[in-house]
Image (cartoon, rainbow, N blue to C red; front, side):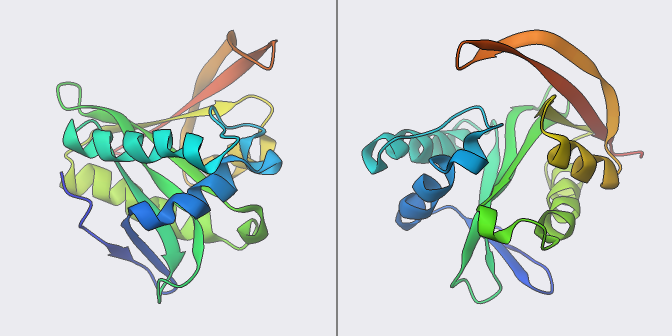
Amino acid sequence: MSSTTTIKTDRLLLRKIIPEDIQNIYKGLSHPDVIKYYGISFTSLEATEEQMTWYRELEESETGIWWAICSLDGQTFYGASGFNNLSKVHKKAEIGFWLLPEFWGKGLMQEAFPLICNYGFETLGLNRIEGFVDNDNLNCKKAIEKLNFKHEGTMRDCEIKDGNFLSVDIYSKLKSD
């Protein structure tokens, strides 16, 4: 599994996350609006190195692949997306996606997500792509439903964040969908 694979759309370039992206990864994963519903956050550039290591280790262990989402010329970093918890045995993986807030509402997710899913089905041989969405993240739930992910149910009070229980909605898309 090599993320030297780049994916292009009419206006997006999805490319390998590189060490120089750390500033943008930190900008996103420390932003209150991004991390409000996201499972991780970082309070310093140094701490963000943990995330950079995670991206590298996903590929090395062949348990996932993530891309930087950029403008077609590669000059503007919009966010990141990819797969983790990839199981070759069960032919499934979890999809994740985040954008810097200044790029929300511009259709970037709607443009990139289908190509990422196609990569999962066609290149990685997945049969199932799973999405786990914080129950309160209404915008993400609306967006993932527009992309034909099916709501399978809600895991009630299954995680604790900031000292409070939260529920997680489970979505999936099958290759046959």
